[in-house]
Structures are given as structure tokens and as C-alpha cells.
Amino acid sequence: MFGFFKKSFKLIAPIDGKILDISEVPDQVFAQKMAGDGVAIDTTGDVVVAPADGNLSMIFKTNHAFGITLSNGAEILVHIGLDTVALEGAGFERIAQEGQDVKAGDIIIKLNRDEIISKGYSLLTPVLITNPDNFKEIEMNIGAQVKAGQDEVLTYKAK
Image (cartoon, rainbow, N blue to C red; front, side, top):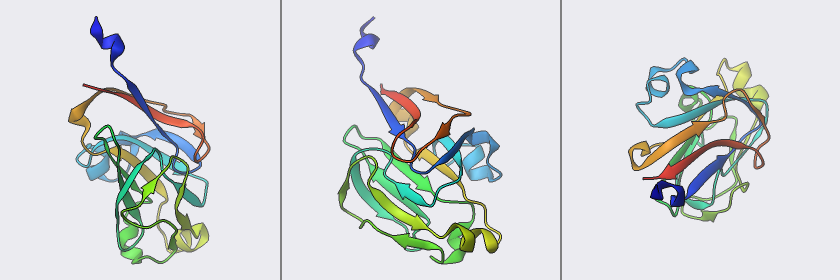
């Protein structure tokens, strides 16, 4: 009965594209939820933004992924593309700095889509809650076309 009073949270799209079920990602670490629970975005954009307000707790030195810690305790990972760590930063331009507080929609990374794709890499982008056991009722917006910084990709509630 008191569950109605539990606050609901949302993540917005960090990049333009279509939301896919995480199980569709052709990388078992993501597909089997070993890195967390969430969605993947089949990207069409070239700007990656913060999916929620929080602290930019980590940006990989190769700029292909970043983590944000939210005030509700959620730890969010945005992993731009698959196996893109091998590019060693080529095609990724860091805009934000690790450790800074960001608002939903703030630009974190800019992409050179053509450079990344021409080297044979997928830009399918997992967006994960890496500590999903701390939350419940994670609902994904599978199939939706989303705009970075605007549209909801998933909602979840605190336990």
C-alpha cells in the first residue's frame, strides 16, 4: 500500500536513436546484464549527453564510456558503441570533465560517427543502471525513437 509513495525516477536519452532491449546487444556482457540492467540505443546522433542530473564520476580515458552517480544512489553507465575501447579515443571528443556535476541534457562526449563506423565499429549504445539491485520496477521504453536530452528511455523506483 505504501509503495505508492515511492518516488519514481527516469533516465532520458543520452543520444538520438531507437531503444532496443538490452538482450539484443551482440555482446554477452551487456545482453546477459553482467554490467547492469537497462536498454541499448541504436544511435543516429553524434552528441552524447547526461541521462540525468548527477556527478560525472568516471570518464574512460578513451572517451568511449562514462559513469554518472545520481543523488538517489543510482550508478549509470553509458557505453558508446561496442568494442570501441579499441579505438583508443579516436572518433570521441570529451566535452565535460570527470568529477563535475552535470544536469540531464548536458553534453558529455561528441562523436565522429563516420570515423568510428568506417573503422568497422557499431555505435549501439548500452545505457545501464549498474547497481539495479538497489531499485525496482525498472520499465524500459523499448521500440521508441528518442531525442538526446528530451525523451525518456526508462523509469525505475527506489526499493
